Length: 520
Image (cartoon, rainbow, N blue to C red; front, side, top):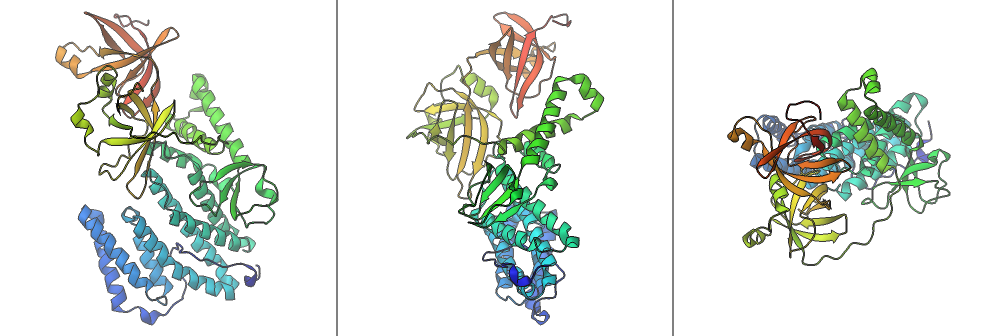
């Protein structure tokens, strides 16, 4: 094990730790004034899990913040009790807001300082220190995943804390004896998981797709290594040909995919070699794509549809993060342009042939989204301080009304969403520019009343001998027969293939169906 004086055990910002059996601090400071309020809060937390309200949530969070302030007021309170409190609080991540996260991170600084002080004197504290930092990074990963599921930007303070954790942990892990290397590997894996999560575009994925990505990631993450490279130092040979590079001076920037970095860097960096990861992902995705094209091979290998979809969604998302993308063009100036969205897809389809909403609908600022960027393929819009928080609209089809009136498309698809802590909401909309015809369709069930219940407008576009149809719902299936109204006549069609399915629409190829039910 290395000389403890040779490792830079410096940490200037707050840290996250989990409980460790370390006898540091003064036990006599654990008076009733400290322990009883925690017991009271713990009881309220247990009750909150059974029966809760928004008012109780706010009050409980305020009590937890206040108690953390008292705990931090005396740095000599034993580390075992301090970490017991933090461990209990961190079981309630759903109560964490930005202030709560900062309060918890702030509470950990004293604990890490206590352990660092001992580690400078005795190298036997290295292993507990690495384990504590590893657990801290694991919490950072959990908070990051929850943040992404809510389509929120990661707080800068949380990313800075992670950088400090990674810097310290990798420095100390390198000095551990061989028998303690598994502890170091757990830390390294957690660091790689955190940075890969930051690199992937989760804002354009549904929550279900996000879960698929994280499940697929677990098959590959333990093969990765992470290196801390101080500025102006030679990069390690193990950095590989391709890597994820994190500039630790820019916490707002996600890791970048880089190829063939040589020499040194002008900033502190985290480097994760990804040569083998790219190869593994390409192999997995190519294999799954081949199974989709070969039904016989799919039956022989007995893959579940869920497993195939997980590999496909997760693999492509990770490969996209490990690809060089062209720099974004300068933002277009769109002054005084607003849009209003129609979230009911049936009304959105009809809006393509109808006029825009009544003027009274446009007066509500809560409904208006300001256009902040525009190009041929799509637009970016924002809304400030609205009570309505959209978190389940990624992939949805949406109707668009333009103000002032415009010849731009009146339908689009929500491709990404991002919320900020200040209340700002942003959406990325892909504009629907395909020429289509709106027709009325229904499933015939023997009575007019039942037919009306399963009747919709469809968008129809010709496509090389067949037709492409957009349904305003996703409850359709392959070979489903329906009728399109043409004057006084019903023409029967069936769905040949479902090409794309979203939360409130389905894109299919359709062909004529014989009324006898035989194959067309």
